[in-house]
Length: 315
Image 1 (cartoon, rainbow, N blue to C red):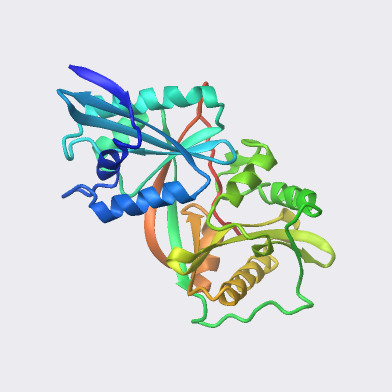
Image 2 (cartoon, one colour):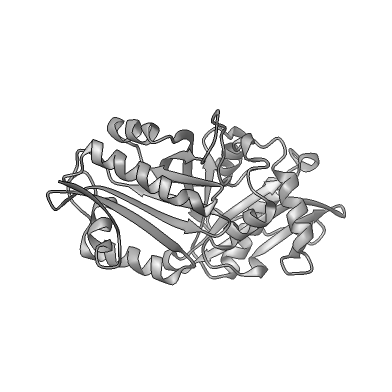
């Protein structure tokens, strides 16, 4: 007999054991505790379903609901630890249906090197491959990069008075982007800002619009991740008229400077594998790849699929 049940606080640990599992074993107690602590301390709501057959879990769906009306979905790998392809597909489809009344802009699945069975299952559920994302990091101090000089830019920090200028600048940076051009117009800019604020530890002084020659040229949004002793580049983007003028390098120098001021060891960011200019810039600044993930995207009530996602850092 097959049943579908909501995941609650009591059944969450077993679900996380399967969702965080490796090929050889389920997640251990410490991994599960750490992930639960992450869920409990952040501004995140979550929902989950599990498919049971003969009392055993055969499929798991889990979604973290993010500010800005999007969701990160986690799915177990079929063929591992008792997970069956048919039941996992059922869990994923039912879970996505359950989210539809929330009127989210999209849901996203991020997986490291998906096995063919998982890739097929994700696509059967209506998700489409978006991009390969590279997760990069470098030491904040070595090799050394000088902080920006005063004459190179004025840095406008984020608050209620500067909100509109941040919104306008962010919108301009999306124009002709190399990081999934279909992002433009996917979400209202207020939802974009809300989603960025929920990444890491939001501190307004870590967000800035760079004014060059009196004009708003770029946006740099940073977040401290104390548990990793890192500062994350949540977003960086340059407006079209200031591209290929060294502004991307200026933003990275500022990011490294702010990282050192925050007494964090490393600077991290994410880049779309297709964004060659940005990847070349990061290579010049000695960033190294930590891991690579494949991004899949789901949108409700959509006809022909169009690419859409939260955009990684860009030149």
